[in-house]
Image (cartoon, rainbow, N blue to C red; front, side, top):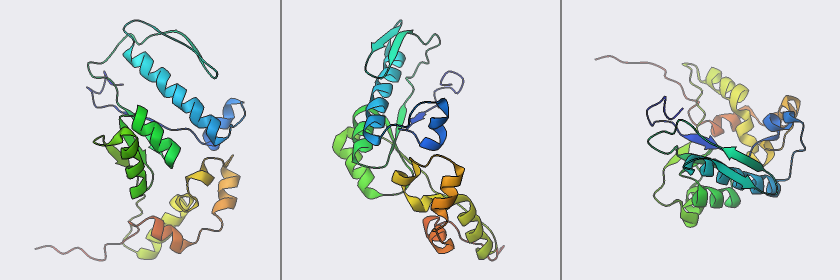
Length: 192
């Protein structure tokens, strides 16, 4: 991708969420194990990017034999790491090139800096639900983004869509609107 996109590609990684990862038929590990596995996966990915020929790795969770990228880009692919708390901020600060956050929480940036992220780029996510009618904008925010109200510690371990439905049944429309600050309207447009 980096070769095709002329150096503009970034690889975004995270420790995963049960909804997407449990389908491979393995157990969903506890957060400490996931972080341990994720840290080693970042080491492996970095090793493959940096290896002049092939890369080998033997470890508790992974074995890699003679991995090689044949078409290396001129610029190494920056690795972005998703953060949600102290452990992920440590991993991102120490091993990542970019911090990725799903919410604008200053403490995440502070912890990222503390662990070596100072001066590195940050990427944030914000939900947007726009409509000329405020009620429709709030309804859209609630329909599409109410899971924001649960927090990452809950979202990471929910196993499927029915679980998300059940967990978010307690998130009100007003809460969705406050978690989606762009659930605003444009009542009129003036031209001069």
